[in-house]
Length: 375
Length: 105
Image (cartoon, rainbow over all chains, first blue to last red):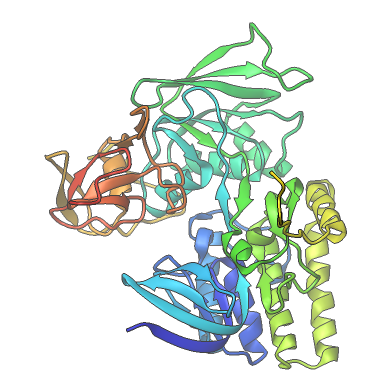
């Protein structure tokens, strides 16, 4: 028998965005069900051992690994129902979400849905990049910080954004040598505080360099690094061999937007936000009424902004369900937008600001049907 | 003791499951109950989890959270098991998968 029920708000994904969305909507009185494929809450927070920045609203000073418990406790107090081990596979035109739980297919029909599905790690193509030992940075964090297993004794990090820098530091904490961090861009993309931490510990950060080959027959045994010229092409004669057992790719993320494609949301290609993202308004409602998005799924950023976006989407849902009066809604919305603006200020937020500007200009994508073709 | 297992960490403490025996390509190995099969194999020094369909290139895990399918193996006769998520159990029989895997078994 197929399990089917209804609820007011379904949140898909129980990471920083999803838990925050659930908390905001439930605090305002909405009935919320969170679906998550993992066996516990937190999404990728469960491997973030570093202390967060930002403001108190974003749990600044608290380690990422401690945030899921804080949010879950509050959400449970507010009556949020959380279903774990629930992998959402489909969202249908009649508003039904299908998910697999304990090898059974279940259905849920919510009045509103908030997709907080996160992102997946990008790959980088170079000879040997398919060898075992080439890992996503997040994979290394999971292996090391969740399961207590090192990826190897010597690791090359590719990418000096915040993820590359933070994971390098975490590798050092786990007793792993980081042979170098290579970064193709002119500048280090991550915060200076993270960069100086790893530099102080003796890890070279090589800007204008990339990995051009992974060596090894069955698994990674080393890598060739090369300098890049103005056209981003490798400069002949600058090859350097490094001995390493693993190559960790921290070259960005792509929003996990499949369910929003399925829902028929208009999508826009915005590289600054990580690829295809749903076009949405300031409440984070997509072009499909009742379908909201928050966190990396709406544009790749940090966990701190994901939490604020989750709040915003939760607030928008509660407002559309008449659970909050207009004055309070506007005031709360201003607060959250202010928090987000602060997170996106300064040079590190420039890319996101550009992306969001593109979002405002984006035209809904129209499906072109070729009718009566004459060929 | 595996050189891959973290013994001491400045922030984290790992609550590992009990030691269990499992089989990889017929060879008995030891892992911790409940950890992902791919993590247990990695700790035992096994990084090659399958071979690709066309060019039979070795594959190891890439994303470790069930997104990418690079870690599909045969587990107790079932093909295409995402071993980065599959919890390790006592006596599991784990084999490298060749290509797309045989669904009949």
